Amino acid sequence: MKKIDEDALAEAYNRALSLEKSGDFDAAAKAYAEVLALDPEDHGGAAVRLASMGRGETPEKAPDAYVTTLFDQHAEVFDNVLVDQLGYCVPLLVRQRFQALELGPFDRVLDLGCGTGLTGGALRDMAEDITGVDLSENMVEIAHEKDLYETLYVAEAVDFLDDNDDEPFDLIAATDVLPYLGALEALFFGAAENLVPGGLFAFSSETLPYDSFAGRPFMVGPHQRFAHAGSYVRQRLHETGFDVVEMSDITVRMEEGEPIAGHLVIARYRG
Image (cartoon, rainbow, N blue to C red; front, top):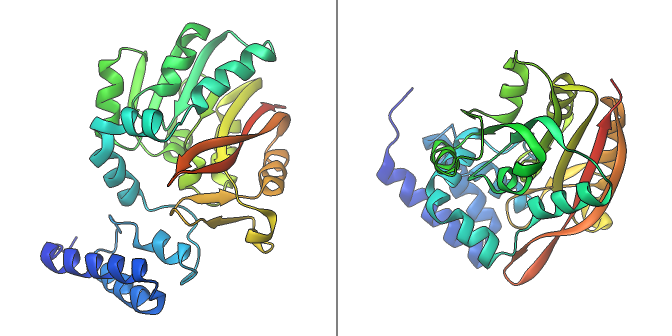
């Protein structure tokens, strides 16, 4: 692995951001290309910023290095910013829907993208055993301090599902994972392979108006997160062995004072 020229990278990235904010997307795209040449692992998320501007191909997922860096940097203030400032309450919505549908309690729960433990806290009294997985070591450390999980792993969600040899789960939750994934096949297949027959898969996604997708199943939205068409989510669930129990329209969070539309999905694995 070649050593990154940090000064050159910072200069190119700041220049790209400035050009993007000024609306000069062509010049910004060239600057982001410089960023990627200096940092092929893409710790700054240049690839998703390019896609968000409509320059360059939409990646299959956000780069692991970018997701790790993003959440490692924000771990200490994550709960305050996401919950108090951005109004994020998806874990509580999941709990409410389980109670309304009379689902649970659960023996074995897997919390993908567990972060600091918001979903683990929301479901703690509904589960006998909860395993948490997150790509950010700093987030996992904070979750560990809360003493909500029997087991915690630092790992990418799909990689964990591929490698896991433990007993299957009867609930897999992924409450803020899809905004960092484009293509959903690997995640959904992995979830199916790690659930008992009849097990539940509960997750949230962000979406955009139908016309925005222009026939695409997913895209990078204006805030550098992936948005998924509801029809694509339903189709992929069906193809990977799931029946949709409920798919609700929700506000995932606020962004610059505007609500971010999304879906809350509860699906059952046919087995």
